[in-house]
Length: 522
Image (cartoon, rainbow, N blue to C red; front, side):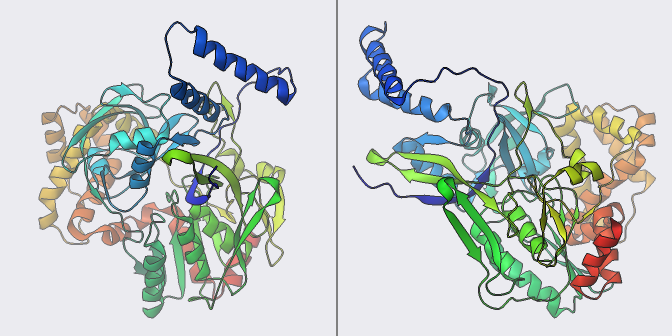
């Protein structure tokens, strides 16, 4: 038998918990092996339809993989392995959204800007329920993503379910070549405070991020806000490289612990690019995997203040094991830990196969006290229990009841709504200056076009929700006319988490000053 070689994947996944209790009659391993042989023999000889022996063994192997309660475990045939390998690299023709499996449900965790998914009105948190009218329930994640990808310019029909919306949302989206920059832009805000959004960890993230830090420091930044909100992760090596920019030689970045106690430790190497500049890291419930490695390392070493809401808690490692005959087995084999010993993986509760969202509960003082505690290098308390709990919790603003009613009213026609919005904004982009404001004339014209597109909204509701209409129209026009950085500057007043981070950096001169602010807030 060929020696099995292990190749670590830079993906971090969820493992479902069993939702029921079972009484199991234990048998010695020898008896279990005998039962398996008997079942295999009876199916081979007595089953009404003939099944070739090769197929029987394959079905048995696939059944074993399916029954270990790892939704990301997969047995790949040579053809499937080639498709999997192709899907994990570089550019592809797709829709521009990051999806993940949550207990058998394919959830959109991020919609990237300037992509078919964004133009079609797909939202973070949408559930994919069908592709080309075929229900995806029971599909593994690679099956779903393979169905979404295809040749550039071809179309795919995708049906979404949106939390809080009873009607399925059917969209026809056109595939395009997708290459998402890890750092789309940087901004030097008033007070010489740098803003650095990191969208994902792809093959160029480390280089892009280092260039962005050097650019901001070269412009005189006295502090940097690193925005990891919505960053679902990616290539772990890039997370190690980015953490390395801020940590001293020899400091631990993260560790991987496998079954049997085997541990692999990742250490910072060389001199940091920015060893002392004050940092604030923004996190939310969609901050996951590689993002949590960075946030956890910087928090544990007191190198950054973490602000926002608790991250997702996705800290499992997968390995790809080549098998005989060109086959391969993908299996969850280890967990990621922060330098202080916190497991990034958050164990989740499921009821009737549905994830119970506890993201709000972990932000309360009582819930934090119930979590296991660890200590940072300076002796500060940091919380375990899965995910990265912020040093300062700041919740994002939410829509008021009128705005929620408006969003609910347009959701059944969300594709028509966003296409109409996009097209009108595209017409306006050549007529505006960076400090433009949304006029009543714009609102009236958009309402007229929405009606023509079949998006029926009560005019009174539309007018009462004018603040949300203005925000959507302003953001779309600004992005098309001036790019993401200008759009971000314009929406600063609506981003309470970023505003708080800026305020904290303005009041402090050193990283210790920023961390003292966190201590004073508890």
